[in-house]
Amino acid sequence: MDASLHGAFVRIEWDAPQGGDPVAAYQINLGTPNGTGVALVPASVRDCIITGLAANTAYTIVVTARDAQMHWSGPLSGTQGNRKTTITTINQAGPGSLGCHRDNDGDSLPDPWETNDGSYTGMTDAGTDPTKGDTDNDGVPDGEEVLGTGVRDWDKDGIPDVADGRGSINLVAMGARPTHKDIFVEMDWTSTPGCPTGYRPTAAAISALRAPFTDAPITNPDGTTGINLIVDYGQGGVFAGGNAITHDGSPIAGVLSDAYLAFRDANFDAGRSGVFRYGLSVGSGNSNAVTGTWLMISGDCARPAHDQAAHLMHELGHTLSLAHGRKSPETAIAVGVANQFPNYNSVMNYAYPEGVDTDCDGDGFDDLVLDYSHGTNAPLDESDLDESAGICNGVDIDWDNDGIIESSVQVDINHDTVINFPHFEGEGYDILRDFDDWARVDERGMRCIRICDGTLL
Image 1 (cartoon, rainbow, N blue to C red):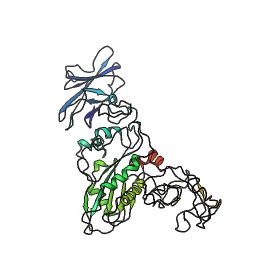
Image 2: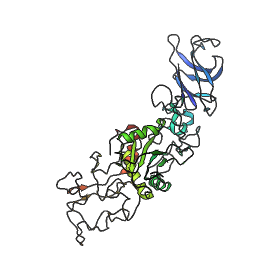
Image 3: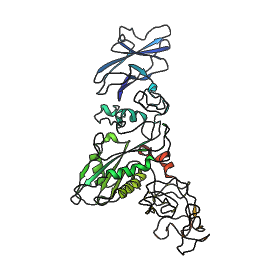
Image 4: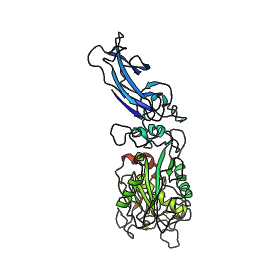
């Protein structure tokens, strides 16, 4: 029989008896076969999660098989024919009463506690779906969002992280909920002689960054919309991961550079891998990101909050599998594709680095609203542009700057022949299509932390 710690619980698995009459049921006891009864489970079950155990306590767990004639695989006063193992719990008592429950979706939450109503009220009433390991589909399994990251076995050594010296991170205390989509980011920053206070993101910048995620058009099992963006930038309490890193101020060549990787390895808790994206804010270097995991921004000391938030949202978008747009639904995302499309209304677009266009004039600098694209703008045919339609039907844009609003003009409005961005349909006159960033984030981007290929963007 195997036993393993899963947060506050112990998961046990046992093999079937060899020979003899068919098994009708299994009895699970603590101590000896005559010890404290935990459960009597059907013959079809050979694993369960034991709840209600005390912290820091050694337990002997015994499983005994019984046939239909009430014959046991081993005498209840002895051990022959039983399955027995010992395990010691750690400093986290198991809530609920003593029992042994199934975990059909393998998320380390006992099925009875996954109440499937979308409403999280606590560990024993999680509101989660017992048939889905990640009810809100945000890339973090339900068990981790409820019990903490210690339920995992990230290094696959057969010992869950919390019992393997890596610690458990209480995601619920950080604001996570298993029925509402969450994105986790740790932000570290360098401190240099030229900026002794460091390039730390400000509270105002983080607040501005979180707002568009809160308002995102993405539904949740709890009946609300939006994404809860949780950023640890060392603000105190449970948010103690973000920290200052002393640096000489030399340029850092992006997230694949030796300097970045050294800082990440020295300052990013391995227990956060697969849950938190890791970001670094520096004074000088290449701002870029890897899909799924790492990002870096650079900028001046005391950078304005909005500028910092916009820059962070752009690079965070890359970790969420967004590039600089997309030419059409059939074209794979790649660096530069769809860049500077006026109808691609996203901070991922180099045309809108400080915010999206909210008044349909093709200029985001006068609006300063952070957002990803919703994919609702009509295509623009550069060979046949109706200036009276503009980007939003009925709002004029003089695409060729001749002072006349015309029904058909030919203009390379995304400048792909001028600044050498890729073009596809001849001489720079293409059909420019919007792209739904938020749908991409929902369908793939959040889970990219575990499934993406690490493409540099």
